[in-house]
Structure formats: structure tokens, C-alpha cells
Image (cartoon, rainbow, N blue to C red; front, side, top):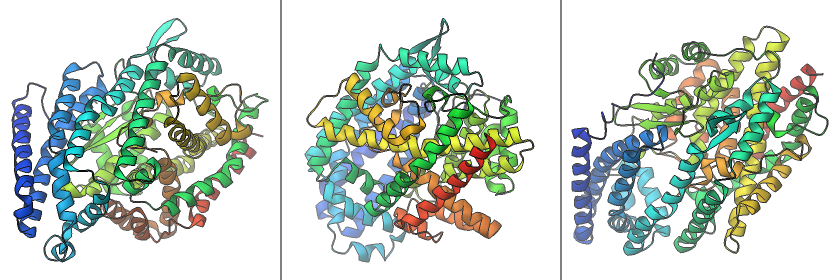
Length: 583
């Protein structure tokens, strides 16, 4: 079974004639769009709408292939200059359409007969077109849109690449051996406490040579976001994140307030784990991911596949069949290596109706759950692929729904199969470890990013200041559950979610997804197999509905704090069981 992904569904290499041909097609489509914009004001509304949507569909097909290939090659090897060059070329090329696209979108948004047009042949694009009308309020002039798109290439996109390059190439000196950052972070899950502590210290030490450069990256990206939001008329970066998420502020407030109320429950879990591991002043950061119970099993790639199939076949055959394809047809890039980005992600490839998954698999059960998570994203991809390309994008909060639902299914299945007390403790603790991440850690990231935005307009925050803000956020989020002397001041540096010129607050969606998934799983337990079609329908709807309307398909009101509390209460029950098991 291959352990690296196959990208030939896109191109066979940078010298593939098909790649050169698609670059030429992209140039032709860009020229067509610019020409359409020049005469748009004099065209009949229906004709303009037909021509624009047709061009967008064709352009999306070509641009997605090109971008996906370049970014996937770069993620697997950040030292690949051909991938970096192609990404730069593509950004420069497609930035040429910013002004023309803004002009056409603004014109379409002004149509007084837009609703009538939607009802007479454009129903497939109803949500897209109504969102376009809403979003037009935040468009700049054609010239400003063009300038901003050009400036991002050497602005936020360049700073984002710098953070990715530095963190993927930096080495940690672990017990005299130079190893990649992703490898030393994986040691946080090692059963040996000495290994975990040494890895934690090696990780913190390795940031010293790159911390100021990455601090410049973060400051520059966040200031650009603040300035762009002000220019466009958003109240704040959070206001923009919510509008981009198609999510109400009432939903976020209900989610955050429920999380804050339940924080002490998670601190109880952390203190119980600390005491079980022999700590008296709360849990040290380096033991956050310490396995408990029986935890000596390592999974090969084939064993990971069979384990996942055993989890998901009882839930849905289509999901299990897709997982088998992912392993058998080289959708997944497994091993950590020098130059490969850390963490894990899924990338849908709509032109091939497939996905590609990057992970840094080293055989732990946690890595198996990570695969379940990312393959949940891939299953979500499968549900939206039937839409036209223009209708396949879904917002950040629902983006984590299928992935976290997979985690919940896998966690429940593994607990049911547990034999001994030690095995049940191990599995239960691994689930609580993840739950603590999506509540306490995500809340700390939300607090940190809020503080960065509040300070950035008036202050350049050097590495020391960013570490200070991160520690403040961690102390508030983790309370007395963690040892205050062994926190992680550099979580701002190693998490790529902060480093985007287009996305802010890519943190609360994980808490949203985690608790939303638990609510959906509770419905599955109540309804049985009859729930599965509803689940798929809901995933299908995520790209053509607001978040709240999507949830209504499953009978859920997201603005009701009680819904979020029900998900947290189910975790609290597991924490009570954990505390009994470790006494």
C-alpha cells in the first residue's frame, strides 16, 4: 500500500503538457472575463448573467486544478521552488480579474429583476446570487479591487508562505539529533514521560531562530486584515469572519457562552489527569497528550485502514467505501519528513470527484483518529461534488462538521469494542483529550486572536509580546487545570490558521463542529439508519444555505444556547467516568 499521494489526477509533473495547456486556457478565460466586464453595462441582464456564470464555471475548473496541484506539491515539500513559482504565477495571473469580477458582481447585485431572473432559470444559483447581492455592500471600486489583489501577492500571501516555510524547515535538537518540527511535536503522544518532556523543551527551544520573523508575518497579516475590513466597511475582522461564515452573531454568542460556562468541567478533567500522572500543581503542557491506560499499540497503514472500515461500515456503506478508495487509490500522504508541512488537512479535487489528504502519520491511535477526521472532510467533499463548481464552497463553521462527526463515530465505536478497564481508560482519555482541544485550546486561540486584533492597530507586537498574549489566553482558557509554569507560549507561531490574509478567527469553527457533531450523533442514536439520509442531505446543503438554515434540516436551532450545552453535557458525563476510572 503506497504511503504518499498520487497527484497524477491533476498533472503528471510541472512539465506536463496538460499543465501548460491549462495555463493557456486560463489566460483565454481571463481575457474573456475582462472583455465581458468592459461591455457588461450594455448587455441584457439575462445574457450577462448566463455569460458570467458560464465563464466562472470554466475558470473555476481550470484554476482549481492549477492551484490544487501547486499547493499540494508545495505542502508535501516546501523546498519545491517549482511549486512556489507556480503559485506565485497563478496569484499574479488571476489577480488580473479582480477589477472585472468586482465590476460584474456589483452590476449583477444592482439588478432590480434579479429575484425574477433567479426564479426563471437560475434557481441552481439562487443562494450564490443572493449572497452576491449581500456581499456587494463590501466591494471596493474596480481599481481598488485590482490593486488590493496585486498587493496581496507580496503582502499577506508572502507572509503566509514565510511562516509555512520557516516552520516546515526548522529543526529541533532532540537528544542530540536534528529532527523536523512536525516530528518533535508528534512525540507529545509518546507513552514515555521523559520523551514527552524532552520533546516539549526541544520544541520550545527550536523557535528561537525564527520567532521574530514569524512575529513580523503575524503582525503584517493582521494589520492588512484590519485595514482591509475598514476599507470595505466591516465593523471588525470578526464581523467579516461571521459574514463570510454565513453565520449569525447570536449563534457565536450562544456557542461561546456555553463553552465558558463549562470550562471548569474541563479543568476538573485536567486536574484528575495531572494527579493520575503524579503532578500536584495542575497538568504540565507536555503531558496534555500523555496516553493513559493501555496505550502501547502502534498501527501500520493497512491496520489503520481496517480499523477505520470497522468503525464506519456500520454507519454508512458509502462512507466506508470512500475510505477504502482513499487508501487503495493513493489519496493520502502519510509520513512526516523534512520540508513537509506539519499537521493534517483535506483538499477536495472537484474535477476528479476525489480528495487528497495530508497527514503526519506515525502509527498512534491519535493518528488513526486524525485520518478519520480528514476523511470526514473528504466525505463532505463527496456530498457537495454534485453541485456545480460555483456552488461547492461551504463556510468555515460547517466545514468542520463531517470531520468531527467522524471523530465522534470512531470514538463511540472504539469504546464499545474496549475490553479491559485499561483499554477503556485509554480510549476514553483520547476522546477527552480531543474534546479539551476543541473547547479549552480553541477558546484560548479565540481569545488570543481577539487580543491581537485589539492591539495591532496601535502596537507592533514582537515575539515576547505575542508570547505574553498567548500565555494570558491559555491561563484564562485552562484555568487551574494546567501547571502555570509549563504552558506553551509559542502556540501562535506553529499554528498556520492565524496566517491567512483572507480568513480570520479560524478557531471557533472547530468548537462549532465538535459540539454540532455531538448533537448530530445524538440524533443518529435516536433515529438509527433513518438519520443517515438526513445527514447527507444536510452536508449537501452546507454550500447553498446559511449555517442556521443548514442546521434546521436536522431540526436544530443554533441560536439556542441549550443546544450547545447538550453537547457539552455529554462530554461532562465522559469526564465523570474518567475521574472514576483514574481514582
